[in-house]
Structures are given as structure tokens and as C-alpha cells.
Length: 158
Image 1 (cartoon, helix red, strand yellow):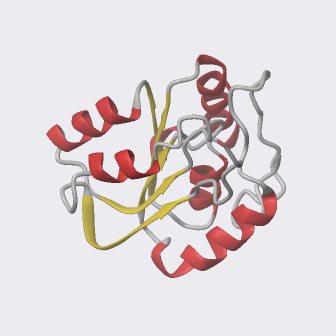
Image 2: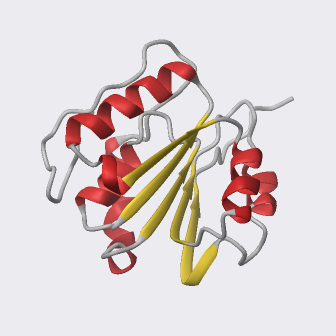
């Protein structure tokens, strides 16, 4: 996996071993970040279920001011921290290891505000609706914020 565009274009990202996370496909990242370009300059980005951080790091590469990454899987967090260090964006990134709902409570208490929120929960949990509820309406969102949720759109027949 590589950064697709912006200041870090072409830089390789570390991905975690194992099958507990799945990186957002390049085509999806391209379409997503191209669509988000009007919101990215100087944005504060929240990347939930971040995995190795491909979406948030791509946002930083394209002009976001800061990205907060939330991920609970130890291998993914290790890869994410390596990516943050490898790109030299430690001052513009915060890595939170833990459950998304607890992390959102902490961020709310800290009065954090985000301009762009991306969430891509694991398909087996399909936590899109509950995570959107946990975002707490506008409490964590700046004025004009945008929230994007990637989710499974096909369901297997029962």
C-alpha cells in the first residue's frame, strides 16, 4: 500500500500481518479523498477503525492539519505507528489504541472537534449505525463537518 497523492505521494505504508484488518482499497481511497478535497486543507481528521492509517495518512498528505487514528488491534496499531514515524508526521497525528466507543467518549471529554470523520468498521461487527450514534451528533464535529462511513452493502442470504 502506498500514499496515492499529495506531499507524500508514492511513499510506502506498512500493513499489519494477519487477517484482522483489511486496508481500504486504492480505488476507494482515490475516490474518497478526491471527493473530500474541498474539506481537507487544514482539516482535523478522525479515522475510526483506522487499521494501518491509509485514509488518515492520505488526508495528511493532501493538506489536512491533523489526524486522530483510533484502532484496537495491536498489530494494526504497530503498523500505524510505524507509518506515522516513517512519514515524519508525529506532530500532526495522534494514535489512540482502543475501542472506538470509549475513544469517542474521551475525545468528547477533551472537547475535540473534527472536520472530516471516516469510519470503516470490520464487516463482521458492522458497527456503522452504533458508531454514528456514538459520535454524538455535532459534539465532535466542527461546523460544516463531513462524516463518511464505509460499510458492506451486500448481505449474504440466510
